[in-house]
Image 1 (cartoon, rainbow, N blue to C red):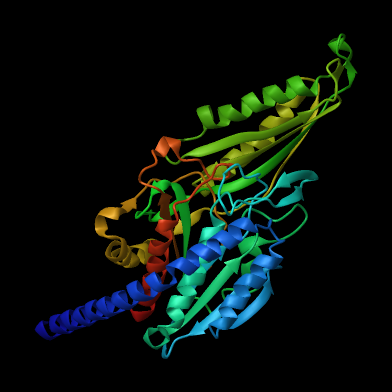
Image 2: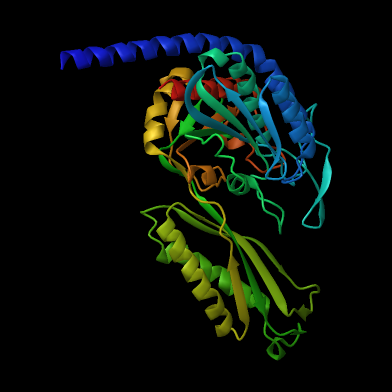
Length: 429
């Protein structure tokens, strides 16, 4: 027994020495690449592209990865880029992922690198903006790639860099995102043993990391309800069947599924209506109405129950108002689920790099991430990197997906250091 304990202590001491050696190099090389990361981020911010249309973004990424001598594959899942770095020592395979697409949002900031890009989305003219921080994710991972390229002799195994398009969802009628990447075999050849990813948090203080074992982000589904009534003059509603009034009752009914039928002490759940379209004139009761929204769940049994009740309730409420209605619910994104064993194993790395007091365990949030598709196949850890200046009050920080979205670029360095350390520690152990 004493011999076994001595061996364990010896291995632990060697691991500690290795970590210290890694950390000095990580700090040195990350600091050297910090200005580049900021420059890359500003380039992407000024030149954003929508989902499945990230052509120039992909070329820019691929050029950098090729300059590092990596094996680079382009056109993965339409516009994705995948690169392979083989370490000098044998070992497992770890994947690192960044999302590269922007949003149909018109920027309102006055940054020197503000986006002026215009495009068409769902048939409407719109500005295009990195309003969720994917520009920073991409730049950080490019920085990690450069740091690890200088530490090839320290790598026990292989690193796969995944630059993924269409995290925000592929255009209607198209495949895309993590689901398509998995379908095209991005986790194979070589087979990935674990995957890490981060998301910048505009409301989280710079210098902090937030994580949660298990479900950290919700499953997300979109739904569409089409209500059919009977058109009539607005002055004589009794001659028609009003799809707008029917829609209002359907919307109210959907909320009771959450407030009166869902076991919210188990997990949170949300049904939101994001759009309702009907009518063309003040004195015409239209024939049709459309309701579009999202469902967020953190438990698959609750998701199944909510889906079932929506499909039962929508036509029933419509029938009670002499109308008819159909509902379609898409499969959507799974729950972003952090493997408990992997999270426990890598927590000391997070605490070592960011300092223990800056690593915060959080409650699950109802935002969604298609990183979850990778986690369905291999153990994964997804965490949040602080991106809010400490001088900005949380209530004053503009939210994600808004025109005023803003990041403190001083937080990017921690992102580079953390992903690099996670990679080396996982492969070394």
